[in-house]
Structure formats: C-alpha cells, structure tokens
Length: 276
Image (cartoon, rainbow, N blue to C red; front, side, top):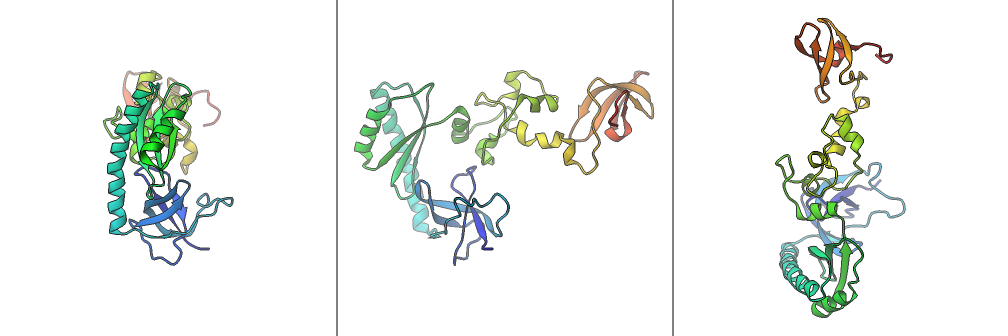
C-alpha cells in the first residue's frame, strides 16, 4: 500500500493525510496541497509511513501533494498574514457601520488568495448579507463569514489556562472531543464549575485526555481502586480510605489507631466488596 504523510495547516490543527507521490518528503517539510478551501501551504508533521486505521476515508481518499513549498511560498504566506491583519481592521469597521451584534475573532486568507474567511461569534443568527457585499467589493475575492462557538474561539485566540500553561486546544489538541461531568467525578475533582471549566466556559479538555489515566481497563493487571470513604483491611489493620491517587494507583488510609498510610491498591482490601 502506498505511503501517506500527515499535514497540518495550523499549529494545533487537524492532521490531513496526503499521498507524497513521486516526491521525497520528510517530516518538517512544507508542501503545497489541495484542500476543501483551495490551495494551501501546510507543514508535514508525520513523515511517510503506511496508512493506519482511521487515516484514510474510503469515501474521500487522500489527494496527492502538488509540490514542495519554496522560499517564495513561505514569503507569500507571511504576506498573507500581513493582509489578514488589514482585513481584520476593515471588517471590524464594517461591522460597526452596519451595527451588527457580532464579534470578529479571526481572519484567514487561503494561500492562493482565492477566498477570505472571517470567523466570528454571536449569540444568535446574524443577517450579514450587506456586510458580505461590502467586503467583496473591497477585497475583490470570495468572502466567507463563519460563525463559531466559544471553544473554537479559544482555540483560535489562545491564552493561559488555570494551570498556568498555554491552552491545550491552541497548543497541541487537533480535535475537540466530548467532555462530561462524569469524568470530573471519576478524577475526584471539585464539581465547582469555575474550577473545572476552561476560559471558554466549557468543561476543560484535559478532563477527557487525562481520563485514560483513571480507567483501570488500561492497565495490564486489572486491580480496581477502593471507593473513597470505604472501610478497608490492610496488613497494618483496618481503616478508612481518605484519599485516592489514580495515577500512582495508591490509597491513603486512616487506620483505626489514628495512623495514616499510603498503600498500593493491591495492598488494600475493601470490606464487603465482591469484585476484589
């Protein structure tokens, strides 16, 4: 089977797979490829390898890379970024002129300047037909206004999370995955919305990708943790579980003699439990 390469168009964007064709392409190279939006310049983040499950869709097989990017292509990309800032300022003026209840978030030129995409947020539906006419008259190219949600806004703008690090969605997460309050419960986190929500106001993405650490099925030896607050039997006597560390697979036990011990799950037997 023909090898494929993985290409990204943004730092934390989705990886799209292409056939390298006759070209010798390595990880870190820039390539010119065809996308849904038109011709784009992307960076190779996965070098040539055999396709894996999920890499290729039977309905839409990968396209072939057109060519490797040149210094002139990268210069054009930088020029497009400069134009994006100008387009952003112009669009904001037109939004104010038409008195539209929308917030402009980002502007993107396609590499071939065949289309300009304006990303915005709004509380409801916006009639922006007159705005599109004005923008098309100014830029003389195809105009697309795309309404996005708060999670997409955070991904585009970036920022610092409550952990003090750059936002995961803006740094390395390619796709948003469903996050549930159940994950916070399993990780023994406070259910206070202000403590488990990101700057976008939604549940933090790390609740999802860190949740695997808390799932026993991922371990070679399936040992279930004792329940928080359960009565347990240890080699040092009976006691009560007062804390669980899911990553280290340990339990803090307050013994009946008032001593506190940190024990592995294997060394703790929960009283009245049938699955241990």
